[in-house]
Structures are given as C-alpha cells and as structure tokens.
Length: 113
Length: 113
Image (cartoon, rainbow over the protein chains, first blue to last red):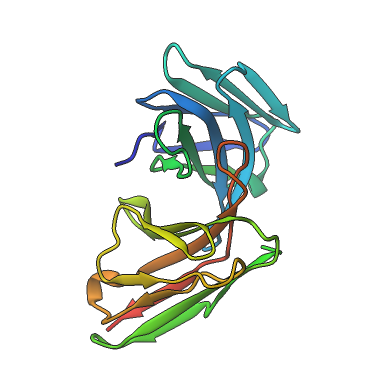
C-alpha cells in the first residue's frame, strides 16, 4: 500500500551537479517527509514540509510541495560523493489516524567523484 | 543512530525457531514502529505502538508478535521463523507523526535458513 512514488528510480550524476528527485502521492496529506538511507544503514530524516507550505530549505536541500498536483520534489545542490544514498518520501495522511507514514519505494542516487 | 538501538545487528536462525529482535529508545517517544525492508517492496510496516500497552497491526503482521510494557522498549518476536521472514528489520520511534519525523535504528539483518 505504497502511496508515495519516487521518480526516477535511479539517478547517476557527477559531483558538483544538482540532483532532483520527485515524489507523487494519492491522498490528502498533513505533511510530507524526505529521508536518506545510506547502504546498510537506517533511514535518516532530512526534512518535513507541511501541507500549507510550498517550499522549504535545509542547507543544500530544497523541497517543494504542490498539493494541487499531489507531488513534491527534493533538490540537492552541489552534490557530493557522500550524498550517494537512497532517498525516500513518506506522507502523513490527513484522514483517519495519521499516526503512520506511508512510504514510497525510493530513488537510488549515485554521485560519481 | 544515537537514542535508538537495535539488537542484534545480525542474526542467523533456523526455520521454526523463535527469535526476538530488540529495540530500545531513550527519548520517551510515544510512538514506535517495526518495519521490514526487502528489495522491490520498500519499507513495510509490521506493527506499531502509540504508547505503552497500545499496539496495532501494520501491513504485514502475520507471524510476528510485539509487546510494549515500557515506553522505551518495543521487542519484535518471530514466533516460528520462516525463510520468507529473511529481511532487514528496522525499528523507529517518533513523537506524533503529524508533526515530527521518525528516528530509525541501524537495523537487524535476519537470515532464516
């Protein structure tokens, strides 16, 4: 019952380039979150954007949210080899109990030195 | 990940054995979650808990049992391990997901032979 769908599934770029990942979802949300997972490790929370926000920044990360299109994008600027990881979006649904996040399958990002 | 620890890190067990995976958090987060992560399926919720003594099923609860007698501990038991339960298991904790992201443990890689 994945709600989020990340696009692309895999992305390979050179160090210094920008990386953009997209996430689409199906139902009304309270917030949308992005996470990073390095190989063999647990997920790390990157940023949370609420449904009434359109854009949020954190260091080299920029997240946008378009609730009319039910989509979000994560931009990593000036990428580094250390950004190589899988990136997941997760949504907190508005309806019912929003105690559980709904996860996408992730985008695998490779940043080549 | 400081504040939430999982043990063991790796476990090999035989089919039919009972196995318990441990999860301990030091933040007094009310919510705790167990996920399994498999290639092609992403993160799938097994069980979650909104508070001590309150647990609820996720997407894939069959074959698993949880308990939460104390806020800080949320063990996951495989009653009779099967090969299909070979996976990486992640525990996470959170203040109410409506407002906060999840904090994940480093995971337990379980192999059932």
